[in-house]
Image (cartoon, rainbow, N blue to C red):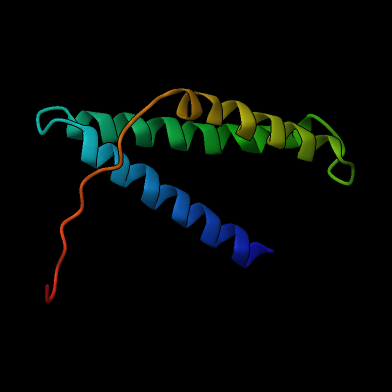
Length: 92
């Protein structure tokens, strides 16, 4: 499960950062990615504090994480952004 979770998060980071790079203007890209990284690290650090909320052997912590992940997806689901254009490499 740890391997699968790690691969899923790696895929999530690659997709999120590529969409941010694809849609940000050159003048704002550095600030946008810095803001994204600050928010990401603060949330990961703050998530460690959730271990004090309930018993680690119970199901409450898993429910909290599930709810937080679902709430985090709402802005993505409500926004419309076209797929970034990709360049083909190799033979055509």
